[in-house]
Every structure is written in structure tokens, then in C-alpha cells.
Image (cartoon, rainbow, N blue to C red; front, side):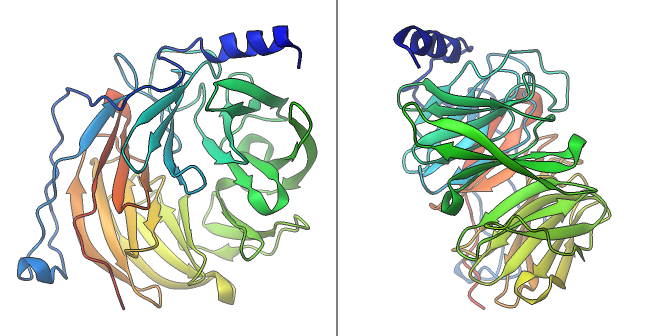
Length: 371
């Protein structure tokens, strides 16, 4: 890339609504949502058996006004940050999980006013090899950005409208789900100067794909089919195994505990399901939640599963036993329309509030599940 091209790329990336780099983690002045326990904790010995009292969340507004079409909220241990792609703002917000410092990488696609849903702009991101990978629905492309310098390093056109992007470290590849074309498109990150995203193939996923989780340690990935099934994919060969039932009428969120071999499915009708993916995807346990479940998250240290529900703005916290059995710890009341959650490695819960364009973060109030 020439110096002139790099200058154009940098200007393009910095054309968003907020500063490109080094932005502080300013907190929204909007009123805090209720954060009360609306279902009793079943195990809270430090509180004499009663439910703990959660602290009020911090809230970060990601747009000057209006809402945001969130569709991904993701913690990445490689950068120790939570990524919040902010839809039509054209920005991906990076929150340092240690101190909540916020960095904005902007100019990713054209902006647009929030009108509900999440059909425009940048709505999914991941981090790997020192780069931020982000999709842009408007241009149907995936981009690789140096977040330290807000510099576009590589980009590639996609065959269909993107949904989720995930970095596959063991293969040095970027996988992008494209439900409209029922496939996962794959790009190798070539270490040229500058680097290049080279298309190396696609995986057909008839009836999907919805959500995507990578297990580099066991060389596999998992994605849902829309109508109640899940499939396993081998990372090296890209071979798709047989699908297995996941207990959902509408498959949505996905989370994985690779050590225990437990995969969790979030069902749009209001349910969580544990699948034993080390033994053929056997259904181990299920628990009911309010409806509108979408992007779920797992804390692998506390063994807590977080399920936001857009129908009533609640977030159900389930304890997960060693065998995958669920124990409902409590239900927090957050904000109307909340449908995405993440968990960092500091035992914090992150959740999106689409209608007021904010991200909430607060400490998990419950004790670890040890059995």
C-alpha cells in the first residue's frame, strides 16, 4: 500500500462520529436501569442464604443520540478487551477489561439512523494477530484494522451479507458467517507488507449458519442451524459433521466451555440448553427464561451463563454444574430490548441497550459454582 493509499485509508477510518483512538471511557449521564434481583438466588451463603445486592452498572453511550443496532458483544482474551460493534455509527468500541478505558475505531462503513434491528454498518468484530477484524454490512466486506494506529491494513469483499466474524488463531484465518448464502466464508491472513486477506474457501451450512464459536484447542468450531440443530466443523479440513438437536425451536446464541466439553445454546423462545459436545452433542440440561434470547455469554471461571431477553429487558444468570446441570441464580432487570451479553476475565457482565445506544457493565453478584 502506497503512502497516499495509507493516508486515504486512515482518513476513511477516522471519518466516524467519534475520535479514532485513545478515547476515555466516559460514562453516560442517562438514568441507571434497575438492577434488582427479581428471582431468588438458590445459593448465596455470604448473604445468609438470601440474594446478593448487585451494584448499579456503569453505562457508556456509543452514539450522541438515538439507538444502536447491536448484533455482537464479544470479549477477546488476546487483547483483553470487550468489543462493541456499534452498527450505523461506523465504529467498533474497544473497552479495556482491566480499567474500562475506551478506544473507538471508526469509519467502518457508512452511518445511518437507528430504525430498529441491526441491518447496517459494522455489527460484528474479533481480534487476532494484533488486528481488529470487523464486518461492514453496507459494503459486504470484512476489514483488518490496526487499532493502535487506526490504520486499515486489509479488506476483502464477501459473497453475501455478513453476520458474524471470528478469528481462528490456529489456522491464521478469518471466518465470516453469511446466512443469506448459507455458508461460512474463509480468508487467510497472509503476512505480506501490508498483510492481505486472501479468500481460501467457503463452508456450506444449509439451514444456517447462526452464531459461531471457535475451539482452537480441540480444532473444531460450532454453529447453529436456525431450526433447532447444531453442527460441528473441523478447523483444518473444514469438514462439517452431522447436525445434532439443540433443544431450541429458534437457535440463536452460542457459548462454549472447551475444558468441560459443554456447548450452550440460547433459544429465541426463551430457553438455555447444555450440550455435551465431547459425546455427540447429547442434551444434558435445559432451563426456561423470558423470550427474546439472542447473544449469550459464559464466565468459565465462575461457571455462570448469562442470557439476555429482549422481551422484558431481563438477564438470567444460570449456574452451571460440572456435569452441565443448570441452577438458576437470579434474574436481573436491565433495559428494554436488551438482547446481547458478554463476560470478561474480571467477572464483569456486559450487556447492550439498543434503544438508548448504550453498553452496560457491572460485577457479577453471585458466588462461583464449584460442583
